Image (cartoon, rainbow, N blue to C red; front, side):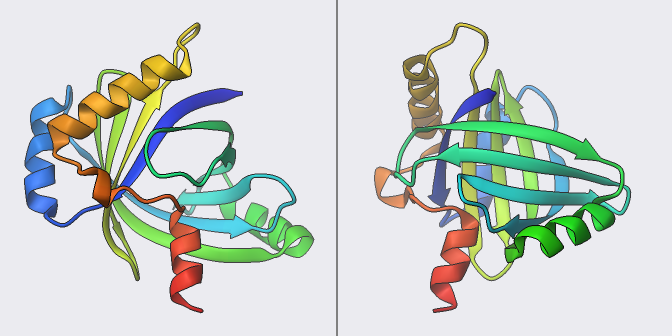
Length: 172
């Protein structure tokens, strides 16, 4: 199972964060429109990420709900027919909810910097430090903390929940 160290934070000034992310990035930004359909599951989270009518990813992941750097273990399977896969998963597991977002992706070394405009929630950012072979959690947490400082992310802005959970709490 692949793993990364993640943080998620609310963004108050998206343009300033974008400038900082661009200065740290090794490559130009990519814009990705994502629709994540979450399904009920007894363990972890399961989502179907629709990227295009003929391209999607089924992603299972487990991570704690804690603010600050945390480990996420995940499995990804690609699909050329996300619509059919969605029908199968909805029929067998039931849908928990949908998250739609416009993601701006920057790459800085082994870290993905995401600037997310989440429908119904606002602006957020995520760091995903991809752990390499033999790299421990502490090394990833150090990288995440250093990037947080360079990006100007305050501890007070960190959040401990997934977008799907924030949407569910908003709708209660």
